[in-house]
Length: 324
Image (cartoon, rainbow, N blue to C red; front, side, top):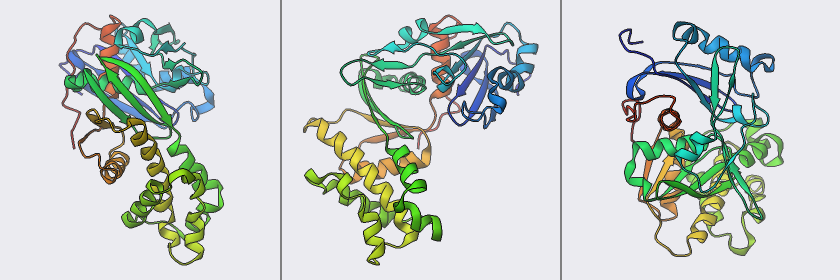
């Protein structure tokens, strides 16, 4: 840690499986960072207050006036406090106004709300909003019109217009893959014999998804097993084939929704390996103007804290964000 810098904000990315804390200085510069596998489903004894105190209690003791803010599932119904959703379209100011601030037992903590898209088939996100507005802060040119893709357990496709989150879609691609891998007959060969990467198997899955037509991928999932039984798909490559089927179906749906329109600037945000997999899949679907942004959460936390008046500096440091 830079001993001469002055801390301005304690920020936390507190999701389902992990907890990461950043001590930020002027302009969002990272002074220190810590992490634990204490997501809301894995918090020791289910005691969020204790986990918070153990992770950042010494920061709070040393700098008691420094505000703290958190994003992610910690603000969900299963988290520490449930923060009401703000409505979509949403911008940074609406998120800032929706903060829920309470006494954590170790100083005040502000939780960032998620976003709800209302309608006959409502949709929600929580945590991704912070990544989205962090990305817009890092890449101001995206604010006019862009498509931000956040692959993961529940992949989000977010349309940006005029600096607002205008619309978003959710695809349970990652969770479906995990369930089928761990709990279905499709994953059994790899569970029994092991798995290794195969780009050819992944591309084969993409091809079968793209060509599934009216049948859809639901009619082709079983080919993960039938190809294995026929000797045409090694057990060790079956998971990459399954991944290709599922990601391919996600992209097939997105391409169909464009209805021939030109895709706006597209940015992938999140885990580098998963984003590169999506980049390969997008190229297969002839969408090649794609950028990758590895990390935007910390910048989003800083930006929302600024909008809420918790801190006053407005320009984030970009030294910890790499384009690949």
